[in-house]
Length: 104
Image 1 (cartoon, one colour):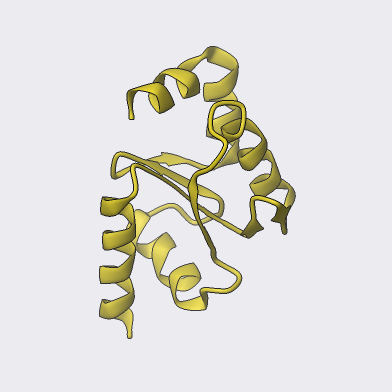
Image 2 (cartoon, helix red, strand yellow):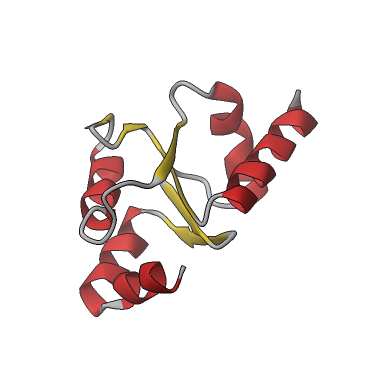
């Protein structure tokens, strides 16, 4: 199952310019960090692809190993890991998030 899950993750990242792996959904985040990430992303995007890692246990287990990033949420833009909520907040505050999203 491990290799199939990694292939699924790679395909999700490749086929979505912006994807957020999070706990819960954008309308019902299940942790404050996911809520924070959604809040700042929605400043520039009405909709974006997300994966609820609480409903996708294999992805929840394998993605941190694949990305070498231990926590959720994880924001990926143009197949690059941007980071978690702290980085998203920092990028929002300094204007980098807006630039990154507009370029993607």
